Image (cartoon, rainbow, N blue to C red; front, side, top):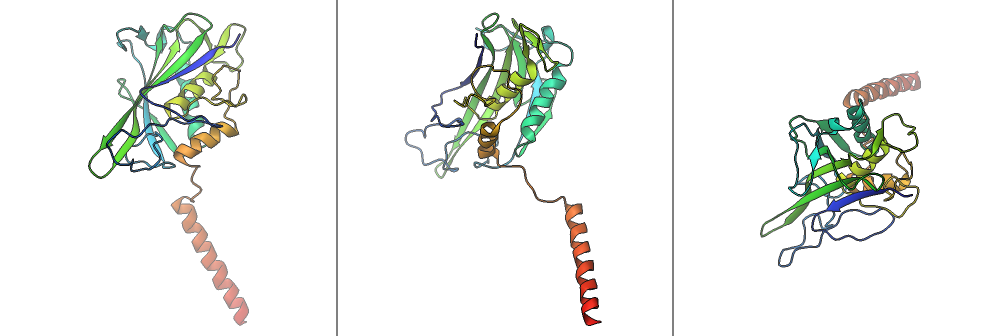
Length: 249
């Protein structure tokens, strides 16, 4: 049986290709979007490929969501250690692209993670809900992701061990997938990719996932740390000076 991983992006359309990203249609009567891409990322001044910083929070005991849904803290049903596993999932995305994540309290994060009674056991395991903002004036329009929530189904049995037993689901894998949605990635038709819509036990990012996230936020910067660069210049100057002295002799 295949288990579904879900994503909901409010009021958006999309074009599907190898990896796919969230895109929006330019509103009637407004000038072209400033970034000239209509692809959603975090950062209200970002263009495609720019770095971004995103905060996240774990829902507390007072968590609630839309009136038609039943939502609550992950502490209600997740095994001990779930927060470290989810934090590791954020770090995995940050290891391949220019994203910085920081955890904040009081459900004030850009991304809020909680539980929900979704649809019972062994169907939809989790889903991500993303909202966006279009800021516009007479000169330009900017579209960007503004809020996100990730909900895990409380009817499932969650594992944090990395090798789930029968009837259990790997929290790291599914958190990694849903965080991908929260960052602007849709499902892909690549069966080997983490962003494939069905749970296949994949617990790492493949080339398709990395290509998608780097399209949104760019590859990891390779610029040396200032101290490293300074040491390099000092060493180069010394070697150059030594070489000149040897030549004069």
